[in-house]
Length: 324
Image (cartoon, rainbow, N blue to C red; front, top):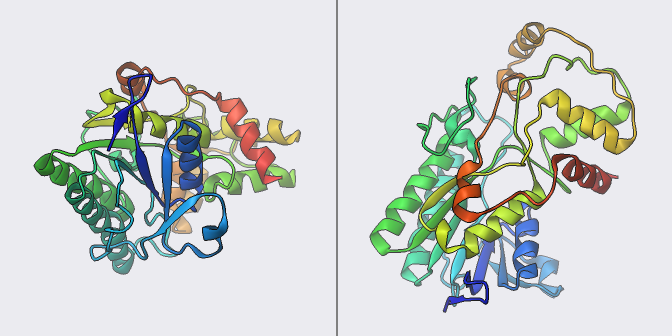
């Protein structure tokens, strides 16, 4: 059964799905450090069953997944597992896969959790539910969601499915919407940027100066712990991010500083590079480099008294050090 700890926050057995992944490892570790009994969920346990952690296997995630064993005695679910990348994300088959795993799989888990008497369900969503469109002000939780990709739509559908199930069952829900996450073991754009800076070659991104907010893995894990424990998090959606806003060019300079390398950022006009990306069918990659993406984290600060514990520069330093 969930209980209040000495700080007046809820504690108890926590199931973390996707615990072998980049986000899952960090969140599970942070929860254990905060004193929680963590069940680390994974598709396949394998050799990890022999380590000091408690592992539980649930197989492939989808509408037919059986969650009964994984949810025994669980007070809180932190759902991080899902499908984030596919070779060709614009095909119908990719859209169906995102829907099956992210949307239908989340709804099925929420139903199973409610049936087992789980008190709170924390879902890691994405700021991409708001779309990638350029804006003159930061996103807030109250903005209308405008997903522009099958992945983003599946995350929004997961949110809606969770809220519908939780509302009927009286189960608390918490939704976290992060921007791009960087840190030890990060894949995707951050790792590519580190690799490019490490070459020492000039990069044509001097004009990638639109304000963008990112989040370091330590800050994301800290926010997840608050989402699990804080009474004020119940039935709330939170945009999360680092305390500081930067830009793609600013992030590259921080990476260079952490690598102790000089980086030359050539001021190639963004319009020229956007055209080149369009010819390569990579328009969304161009948007991630050049479009603004500001998020207002004031709601989680005010509601949960949460302050990102690690600065942007320190978070990048830690991430780059781990890559070496």
